[in-house]
Length: 224
Image (cartoon, rainbow, N blue to C red; front, side, top):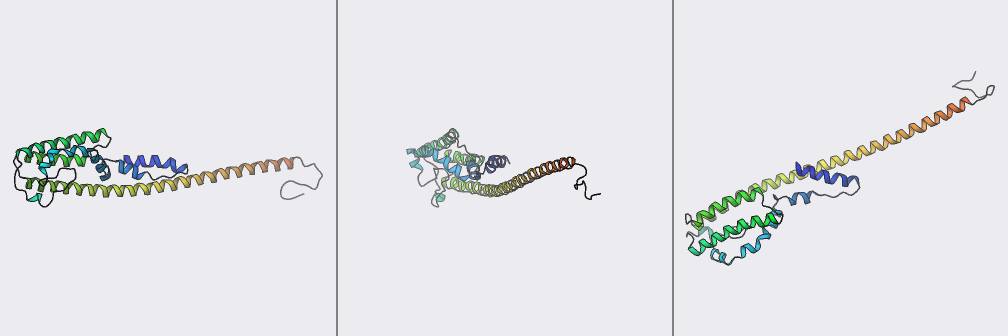
């Protein structure tokens, strides 16, 4: 609702001035909830995921945000070795630092991302402690990502519907504004006509009052 009010407040004055601009994409895509905003935010963290330690995790688990486990990763039944444990620690640090980098860059993580990150972090901790093998971690990661994507899809569908409703309300608001403007113009014309009529009537009454007696002019509709 707040985004819709921002949309209408920004668009309505522009429409009255004759400059109509659709600002929906600017508002919608600037929200942390949108996929576009998340991808742009994660791009701020590319350097964090270039750590050389992460080469120890290659082929065993995804490292970068939104990276999906491969089929081979789902079959790795071993627990991490010592050097891999240190790489997992570094990965957890990168994820947390990425959140701070995004916030500083004005591209904060959304609630959906935070929930997903918390779930994956718990899985990563089990991997770090040697309580679960890579295969279990990767299967869990797939489930978390699937649930998150389903939620995001439902959210974006709702967002699109909200955008359509907002555009319809915008059209209605513009039509109402145009109708009111036309009514104001008609009322102004009526007032002008009324003033002209009153002026003509006063002139006619003055003409009647100046008619000298005994002439063939007479007042009213009949002459005596």
